[in-house]
Length: 474
Image (cartoon, rainbow, N blue to C red; front, side, top):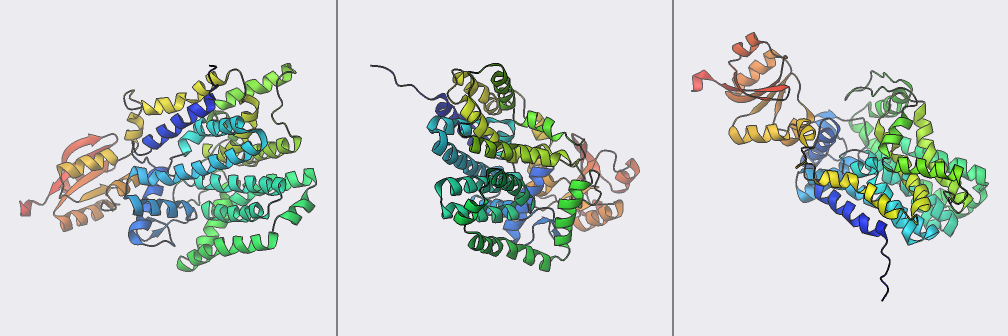
């Protein structure tokens, strides 16, 4: 009896998903991004304030809309405060993206190409990392992918339901990261409709008026409530975060961090690295297409090919002209890149080798601890420090001097206090009577340490831990 052929893509995909599910709770939230967003979600869950995200109690966080924080707060409310519950929403968002890719690819090319597209998206460097990172980008990715897939499905299936879904996706995008979601999804759609001369078809099938009503009824109430509750939010978010951050690479108005200044055009270098190993596979396929007539074109349908190319290139072109960028800005291009490449390689005779290349990163993550690869991750979080201090000095209040990382807030569940100067530190110590003080090396002089009667306990990376006991209470 002849053995049935097994699709390598289908074999590799469950392995990747299982490794990801196992790993999302296996390492601490890292500073600055993960711990900050995890703490915002924790505060939302514990305070019950679902309108104003807070970076610390009483300090509003205006840099991002609330969708990711809503997801994180809901997860923590259901499963408790942990790394797993903080990262679970991003994994769910990525799974939603994978489902959309599968639906779109299967309808066009069949099961093998659909599974290949999902595998490629999930095993690219940026896809695997963000499918479990406490960030706003996975929610943005879900919304832009849903918007792009909805328009294609609406026009090819002549479905008004998919057309209405397009506007729901725009509402999600606005709540995920703001108007940038409209620009990232809208520009390639407008360009494609114009090139294909499909505007009449679009307005005939897509329910524009009901869709706009759905969009604004869903998305705008939160923005209005946020501005009423904390006046100044809209100006900072719309003008500062969207316009000034894009135009000024050294923007000094960031209230919650600093500008990510990079050379203009570096987004293409980020893309090359973020899409590894598939960026190299795509380069090899493109080179083969130029030298051999036997290599298949990237897409069987020119119209779909143009749609996917516009979808892939537009985010990279847009961020080419900004000097304030991060590698995660490549993420909106990932789904279409995966679809383009999947058609080209899904039936390749080298499929087994390609699946093996895709499994390299998940396997490294699975064996990260035995291989010593988690040391840098652990060093970039105060999770272990907080746990050891609380175990050794369980009834001792925790005080940071000078600056307190977001991971300290998250892992102390908000109980750690910050003393910004020596006078404040002394007042806190006098009031507490007993405390554990964590000081960044060099931020407090020996004389100040002596005046505060601090005794050294241990060193943690660039921080030193001291004990304080009021002599009058001994």
